[in-house]
Image 1 (cartoon, one colour):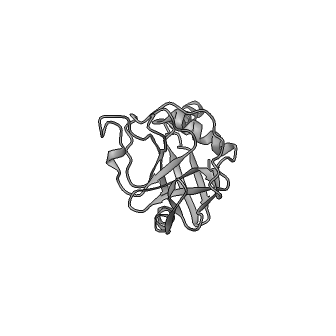
Image 2 (cartoon, one colour; image 1 turned 90 degrees about the vertical axis):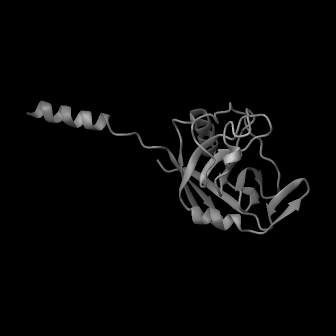
Image 3 (tube, rainbow, N blue to C red; image 1 turned 60 degrees about the vertical axis):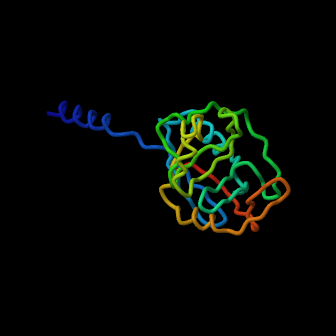
Length: 183
C-alpha cells in the first residue's frame, strides 16, 4: 500500500508542468509583473535574466514611448547616457510567439542578431513586427505582462519630446527602479 501511494505521488509530481520564470519590473509609475517564455526563447530569456541578476536594469529609463505602439527601455540612464552591454544575442523570433498587446520583445537594429539589453512592451497587436510579416526577421517575443498592464498604459500616455538624436523621450523620466526575479 505504501509503495503504490509513494509511486502515485511521484508520478503526479513528475507530470506537473514547470512554472515559467517571472520578474517584477518596478517603475517610478508602478509595478509590472512579466512571465518569461523560457521554452520558446531560451537564449533571449537567459540573456535578459543575466542582466536582471546583475542589476543592470536598476535606474534605467523607458527612453522611447509611443502611445498606440510600444514603450521601450533597458539601455539608457536618466541623462540618456547609454549603458555598456554584453555582446548581442542570436535572433529567436521564429518561435511561434507574436508581438501582441502586453508582450515583451527584444529591441534591435536592422540586424536581427543585434539585440542586447533593450526590450519593449507592445501596447497593441503589432503584427508587422512578427517573424516573416514583411518577408524578413521580426522582433523576438520573450515574455508577456501578467499584472500591471494598467501601469504600462499609464506610461504610454506620458508627454514626450525629442532630445538630440532621440525621439519620443518622456518629458519626465519614467524610471525602471529595478527588475527582480519572482521565482
